[in-house]
Image (tube, rainbow, N blue to C red; front, side, top):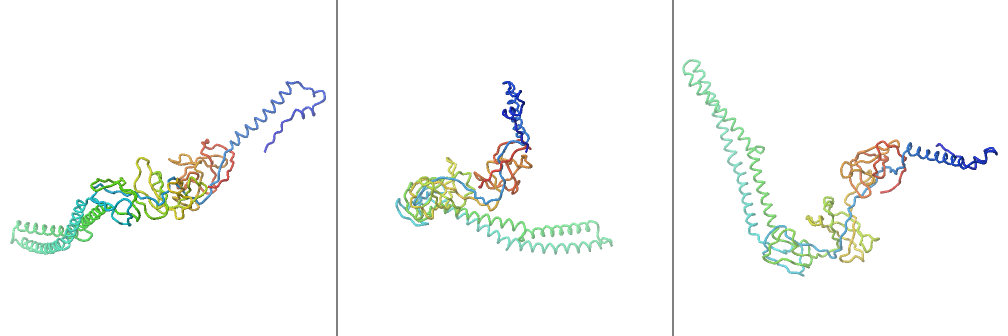
Length: 425
């Protein structure tokens, strides 16, 4: 490293001849200006040649857990909103508010005569399709087989007759018209054999007629399943045992999907009701573990397990309602307390991790600035799991690569002085 030492005023005066030690003010200023120029030149050399100092980080493999952060409230015991999955008229409400009900007990019955008729029609369609299949096997296929055998016999007879007629024609006993007639009959019988051969193949299990009959039967059976499901929706059952704490439906009401008709407070452990942004809907699965904490006791955490995901999305809030069981609720946890959760939605073992803040265009074609021979180059990457602090890189980087830590845009191939930062995700 080059070391430049500027002479001080004292050194200059001690080394100068005695007669020159008395210097004017202008000479002193010139010396100081020279010293400042040398210093500025040195720092300019450092900045221009070696480049600016930039924080960098080395890419390493780590275990990574992706989490979704959400907040909600405590329900102890938790409540289940009961509604209808179809539009219909209420025919009967056999339970009352405050009543204890058992799992599977009927809570609401909708008018179902039309649905029952649809089920009967669907069953009739199945019988019809089954009859068509039997007709194919018992009638059409055997008839086609017999017709095929008869066509073979006709073909053989016509070919024999044609052969005899040809001999008689050659001997002059019959005319050209008779020979032509037998040629037509022979060609016609051969055509019938080919046609019946194709028809007979269509009745086999790999034939088109059999496939059509089988498809009709499957469609009819699907219609029965659909009609039975709709009829099942006409009877709203208690999903779990518990107590009805609210009821907002009466006989004769017209109900629609999405409307809350009853609120059931089931027997069970304390649960957490959480609203999660719908963009995370596909990441949620029943059984996922979360670390929860009550806002009033932020330093204490407890375990919660995802137990229910509402299939509907709240259109006004753009969120999904999910519920968590708390196997061992802490003593301080009270009804309607606000809680925060970190939900573990995915986990990877020993994957390449980069600071999320180092990634450019993360929502489009992600890239980072990689350090190669003390210069920065653009490196496109393929991302996997994403987190707020760190994200997984599937392609584009390898363990030991060094990247610029912050997503500041440096010129391509710019020289830098790397200041390595050691951190843990």
